[in-house]
Amino acid sequence: MTDYIPSEATGTSLDEAGFIAPKIPSAPISLFISITSRCNMACRHCAVYSPEIVYGPDLTTEEWLGFIDEIARLKVFKVKISGGEPFVREDIFTLLDALYTHPIRLSINTNATLIDQAAARHLARYTNRLDDIMVSLDGSRPETHDALRGPGTFQRTVRGITHLVEQVGKVSAYCTVTRLNMDELPGILDLSRDLGILGLKFNELLPEGRAVENGAELHLSRSERDAVISRLKELKADPGGITGTFIEVDDIFDSIRNMEQEGDIGDTTLPSFLDGCGALVRECAVRPDGWATPCDRLPALTAGHILKTPIDVIWRESETFAYFRSRFITPLSSLDRCRGCPYTAGCTGGCAAGAYAEYKTIMAPDPACCYRLHLEGGA
Image (cartoon, rainbow, N blue to C red):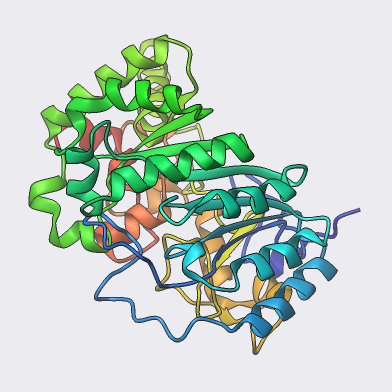
């Protein structure tokens, strides 16, 4: 049976409206581990690299192996491996093999450019414990993909995906939609199907990292964003495993529209809280230099170092984590940007990282998920 942290240890409680914050297990059930800060590419829309974040040295092989033993003792159920680019580490298979010796589910994010036949065959050993390999695919043609990720990357990516599909078979992809590739969405979907990719996510460009300095050229205007959503709805109607943040946010807006039609909008008796973000309910992240954070999109919010404090202690006792979890019982009506909004009854505040990127605080709504801002033309 899973132990749970008492409410006083999480900064959560029963509020006056009868809302109960999520139960928090005594240790994370899932971990997002950025295994390295190094990458063999310099993508123009990368959210990992930012002038505001300076990473320390990557943990060594021995340090990661010690951490793997620790999380195995804690019975962590799943580990998602990312980077940087995981396969720039010469010891990547030493680390993956170590994870595989324990009853831990695996998921891997990669740009696929370093995957040759030998690497794919090695990954095939993990098939019974591997949930998926997520690859990056940002164009249906070399000209488009390479404009975002660098010369020659399309060819290397397609070759790597081909090896993965042939040897492993559990390959999904995500595409970050920008002004450079927004007209190729059907072609990207067709290419993913031709390659044997099982599912495709079309995600919004995050206002983080290199995307900030390249934003003028990459960010979609309101009308472009609306056009992308309409196109994705058409593509989604044709079965093929299309998901992503564009569709997820529009689904939220649809639910608010439905509430509005039913007359529930503006009902202040319906409680609404800043609980739309799933971070720190079951999962947290670890940076390549060993600092634990609420999620991989919030690398600046460090909570403790895994070489100095066990991850379950950080999970239970970190003041940073307790403050983040206080979002779960923070009424939207108490926030300056939400006070007086008629749509709070159908809103959960969205992603904390989106709020932090825009407002430099997690105690705010994600502008990309704000229906009122959407109506006003700001999102």
